[in-house]
Image (cartoon, rainbow, N blue to C red; front, side):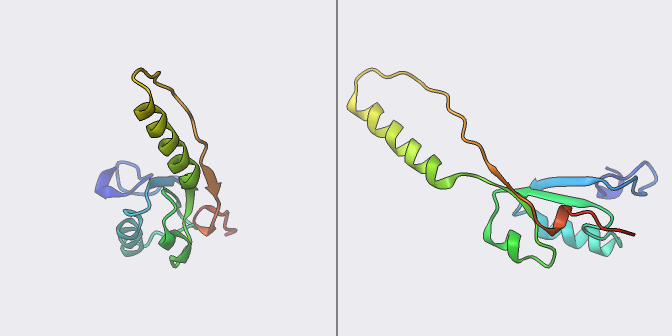
Length: 112
């Protein structure tokens, strides 16, 4: 990424309408850098975060984000811990909890 610009070519110019993804906690500094460079979200670049922290929705341009099923994750983790401590032998399990995509303005198509 020349000059730290997501979706830029070797001269630092943006190609097409790139997408940028990263931690929701990193998004404010990334947005500030893009703003200083004259790059508009979502006009010039789409942004997606994960963790879906409270400020993702409250940002100047609300951030599209993956929302993890925190309650289900905690409940399942607690159950596994109880099962593990109640038995001398246990089996390791692999489970997949599916996040929810929360679409907000940071990824919407903008005409013109």
